[in-house]
Length: 215
Image (spheres, rainbow, N blue to C red):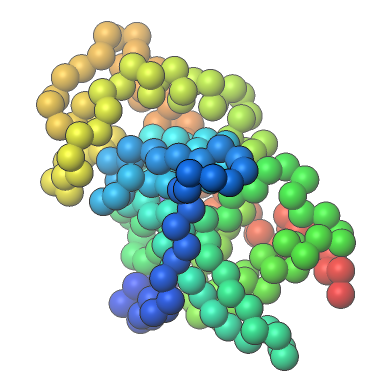
């Protein structure tokens, strides 16, 4: 996996609390994903964010997941901005944290304020030596990956109480059970696919995914 710069030891989180996204009311698909890589159930507020959590859960290189992890507050010229990444992950082969912005295809257009906001956040985080990557729905549905993962999650034993001493890449790390041989083969293949996808995402320049500045 690409090397991620060290961040956690050098930067203290903002004192501002991140917003709670799972509510009774509100638009979109909202819910909780029972991740074995998150102390608390990972929260999502859209279908594409749920797909992203599934892929990160299966990718064996990802050792921890946190949704809406922190708020960055900074000045962009004369303008004060706030940015909250969708997901923060840690990777076992690297030191530090990587942040992910998860979007539907076509979310960023030339006149989009969202594009300017993400561009400013990328620039700010780079100045801090931190990394922000963009994940699109097209990344997650290529080669029917999302269908394969959904089928596996319907069969895989669900997480019980969070445990930090397990190998989350195993099929049933809490109890040690194994699926039928064909399902185990599908599970191992899915892990390879998810790691490959993460590698591709982290090897591309997020600036190349954004339209020209609307300024």
